[in-house]
Length: 273
Image (tube, rainbow, N blue to C red; front, side, top):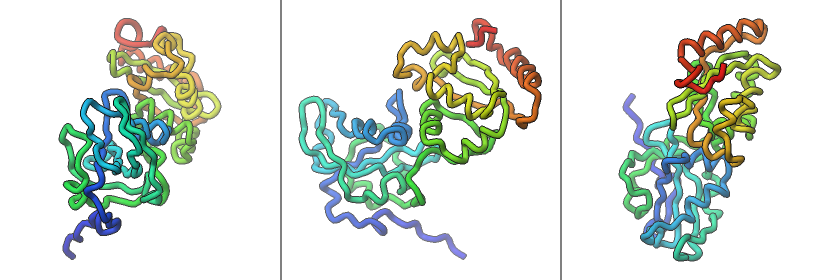
């Protein structure tokens, strides 16, 4: 059997006037992933369409907006069509259109675009875009990857805690564990353990709510109640997982082992003891 021809975006969604659109390839802006922003708050994501650079780059009536689906190469998530209502000196006034609303958060597009410019003429890209997948439900975060595949930004953790995504909650509530919090801005690491009721899920939800989980050293980094620093800096990984019947002291002993191995006490890390 031969390889099937790709399904083009234009095959399932013929747009009559592509030259009236600018396409917005929204991606990492050195602070946030737009995909995470969209999952957490579509209203906040709309501000990415409202931002006006020095040049009038959204100089057409409509915006076809995509967020980089950064877990998969060359994949973009459709996040809406926006109508440009006004062009002020410092921002665009936009309104999300009802057109294509059934595809918002569900349509994944394959398009190997890697250039620096992010606001371009839509008609130059529309004929080349392939349909990667149409999700059954709007995207609400990554599917649980298995205990050995966990590597979460703080923004992803926030989204999982807020939505209570069932696959993550079920898996992480069923285990005790030792975890690693890495500060990508300083290179320092923090080793912690979860052995109370609700397992790792409950413990990580505390971090999602506070940024520091009531850890003394991490608390010093969370000086802004908006959690701006931790959204930029913190990543979460699971070092070990154990059944809930594991004695608490075993978990604490393993936590101490990892603190020693990873040198997280003192100058190289954020563990106080």
